[in-house]
Length: 313
Image (cartoon, rainbow, N blue to C red; front, side):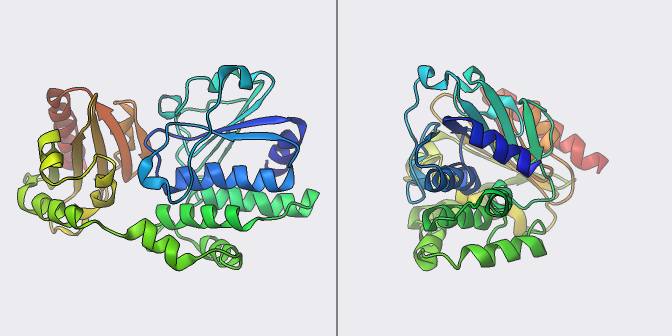
């Protein structure tokens, strides 16, 4: 499969890279890491990384502006995105060939060619494995810029290597990536520096979350609460695991009100919850997923469904 992907990449002069909405470090790491790697090895090709830029990830990269006309005859690669509803960008179908590379369960088998590996810790790990194949097959070289992004993606999706998804291969790949020239200390500082306001909001979460007898927990952070603590909806991504250490919790939801929707962050200590996320246009891992709803009534519906999942677990 990896060799087939490399052969496909070599055939196209324009390559456009997409990832999921509301990106995390693995989304940017795999997407822009692949862009940096391909630009280093194919300077004559036009390669774009597109999507709505997430300001909290500016320390990693920004995004390219791509027009619909750019897709004519292009190879489109969608990374780290299980289902089409979560692809960031409206023109991804307008290319000549669509390739999916992802480590989430293949709930939506889109694309002309798919490489899905649920055993990988991250899509960034998969892109590094693709590099190994490219190095052996056609002499690819890794740039330090690409190594930094791929390492950040792996770190982000493994929770600094503490999640069970971090395998022996994950550590081997990470040890290879850190041989390249980038400042790991600065990277970790950028990734995990928590604002004072977030610490205050975290205390609010601990004091105000709701839990039932079956271990289903939730908290609703409306726009007034975010303004009170002077944090953005994107900032709250650093707090999604806060309730994981609370005894008695089976699964939990943090709702974050945005301008036009309510973000749903789902986490679990056992029950599979990505199916629930998929019902609301989201997806993710079996125990860590995201979605969105339009109203607080719909949010209450998600809570009721999560309660049923915890009861039957």
